[in-house]
Length: 117
Image (cartoon, rainbow, N blue to C red; front, side):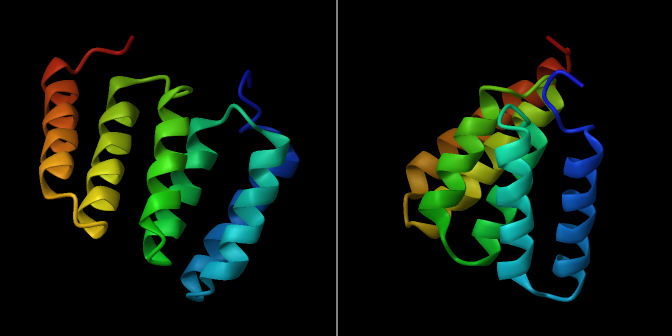
């Protein structure tokens, strides 16, 4: 519970964000995730999910920034690899092909390591 993601209020907001995503309401999902982020400012999961919404909203620069923030709090190499894949997608959407490739290589290296820090 150190990052706050397991707080009942945060869990409720994550659930509400999931419902909004199932209804394809990206703006409502973002609002719920932003609220969750304020309650759990060290939760890699919240930042990661908000980055995903920003990618869906075609806001790749924000998505990359959120994914990079999540990296600071990611607790496993699996999550770090997922975040590097998000960063690669964001960079690709911004037309940064080589930088996206570099991010994918970092993700692959983390996946190959397969060790939790």
